[in-house]
Amino acid sequence: MDRYKMIRVLTIICLAVNLAFPATALSADDDEREQILYDAVRQGDTVSDIGCVLKETGDGKTLLEVSILTKGQGANFRRWMPDRPYVLADSERITPIKTEKFYASKQSLAHGVAPIVFAAIGSQYVGHAGRAASSPGTPCPVGPHASTIEEHHGTAEAIDRVGMAAGLGLLSAQAQGEITGLKTTYDVTGFKEAMSKALLKFQVANKHTRQQLDVTVPLRFSTAPEPEGPPDEAGGGKGPKPPPVSAPKDESKMKRCGPDVTDDYLTRLKIIKGRILSHRKIIKKMGYVEVGEFSFMRKNGMKMDYWVYPTANCPKNCDETLTLVGLCVNQSATNDIIYGFVGRLLDMDLEYLIGAADWHEVAARSDISGKPPVKVAGYSVGYDLAREADITWDALRRVMETVSVNGQRAIDLMAGPHRDCELCTDKKGAHKDFSQEVWVLE
Image 1 (tube, rainbow, N blue to C red):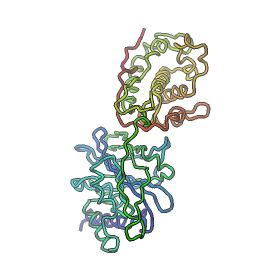
Image 2 (image 1 turned 90 degrees about the horizontal axis):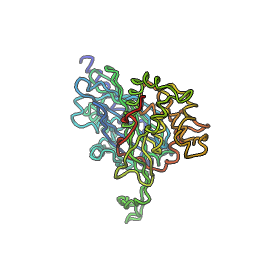
Image 3 (image 1 turned 45 degrees about the horizontal axis):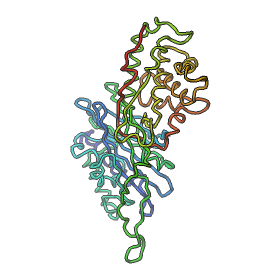
Image 4 (image 1 turned 30 degrees about the vertical axis):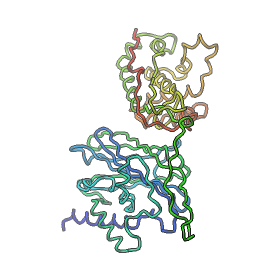
């Protein structure tokens, strides 16, 4: 047997042992509720397949296990790797408590990727992969003992799982030509309710081209308690749980944020940056209204907007809001960010920039010296975002988390008032924004 084949056989056996006796597996005495969720997300020339398991453990913890396998196209089929994953729940970033790689052969994908990503978490979920894959993004309950192999067969079970690992082409160590996946575990104890509207965020990186892409996956797990059935006819224990009955939603009470503009908004900011930098000399020649403020800001400030039409589904009872980087914010926040963003690109002082904001409202108000903190937060976020090397989902979110106004985080000021608004999954672009406007340059 040559060295490559020996490595392959040994790694299959190692993985199979992990599958047969997973460290996170619970005994039959543990009361564990589990849901699985599968999704496939296309970003650029890549497709990422994601398998998730949300479980309650016997010691009162709630764990989320996630496995990701990313494929490219052509020569880059095997070259993309998932990296830097985390979960956003209730505006909190939750990082993995455990991270490990797994590997799959290209040939194994011919039978479907869903079984692969669920096998990486635990072989007991493989039998449910088809059901999860048939409804991407929809959670599927699997019950406390979801194994596809009878538990009482002991050694036979382990042997069967060796065969399963080999059949799936799943490896615990890399051999030449294998596709690299990533498995992560998160402690989401205390965030169970938030898992109905959480986000999984990660990057996919190509080491050959040095290209990186940001990927966002909505996590829509069910957080409603499962009803118990009545006692069975023999009078011993509870009977089977009745199927859940979906009550019609009361649209008048539903609270949903405005459409998700994240992708379009980031693109518009990049366009604005390009235009500002290309006209920088002309803008500076326009001179100043007064010391510190460019004439450009006065003449174009009224145009620094980002307006989006609502969709049929969004918003609902959360008027004038938008979904931005996994948060629900007031629509004016996008305008404020643009204003601060442009000011920084023109090297304006932040303090002066804030003081000069809304100058056109002087005639309408007797006092504009006290800006609402939420407005200052928006200006400051835009100002700091302009310093970032690249304008990405992570960059904007990170700035919102780090900028503070009067001791309060920008993310809390901007998204706090709308925390009870469900995030919208409808994606929308602007019908009017500063990147498309004709700028006054004289």
